[in-house]
Amino acid sequence: MKPLVSILIPAFNAEKWIYDTLRSAIGQTWQPTEVIVVDDGSTDRTLAIARQFESHGVCVVSQKNQGAAATRNKAFSLSHGDYIQWLDADDLLAPDKIARQMEALDQCRSKRTLLSCPWGKFMYRYDRAAFTPTALWHDLSPVEWLLRKMTDNVYMQTSTWLVSRELTEAAGPWDTRLLGDDDGEYFCRVLLASDGVRFVPEAKVYYRTSGFNSLSYIGRSDRKIYAQWLSMKSHIDYLRSLENSKRVRDACVTYLQNWLIFFHSTRPDIVRQAEQMVSELGGKLKVPRLSWKYAWIRVCFGDALASRARLTLLQTKWSLVRFWDKLLFYIYPSPTQ
Image (cartoon, rainbow, N blue to C red; front, side, top):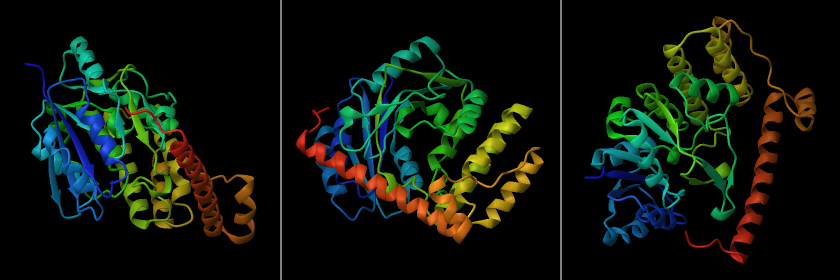
């Protein structure tokens, strides 16, 4: 028999998008699949909309709010698939996404191979999604994948992965301590347990960007800042457990430098830890550079105000872009996937 693929969807207050997400899940050309939705205590109509799909064989359960990581762990505990497809409640899978990746498995024949694919960002109009290749869009060993991620400051979106059950169980559960970047830390562990990544260019995922309303947005949230720091330390430990060469240490220094701006004005304790870590790696951190729009604010009023100004301008700019895209969506709706 063909392998069963479990499509696991954690959902929280996703009433605007979950209908389209579930349509993309049940519309997969690969069969057999099972679709499991775990509603994490939503206060809107997410659960009611998801239950409309129970007649299509979708399993829908609800729980008190526990966070995304705990919700994903619950979904996996209910699954029976030979392969796992994680899918956020506002993203979309191309109809043949899973089929394309399962076809690629015939060539590698290893349940420890981790499959990825291209992903494109969109807000409202998925047919206008921008697919921008990065250094991770290749077949890569675990070491090379982590090196590229940390050096180039790039990532793979959660729904791009297709993971065997064997590999999922070897990686262990999602870390419920992490309010942010739980997917980054989790897939590092999946990667460490794998034989490497097979990139399948024919498969596609559509990633809906929520900007400053997304779970992954850090902003000035102390809990998210701390979660990001925990995840970063794990990234460094995972990479150095595979290889502890100069190129690895240099990549870790670059990684810490790239993210220093998120801690510099609000968490001096984390900055001190980062400085000590970089010193042990043989490098030295520099004060994060700001563009001319904010540099003068730093000089006159300090880091904290410069950081607030930067976030405020980014929020304003993103809100205007989102408003315009939403307007065009209602004027020129995207075709039904």
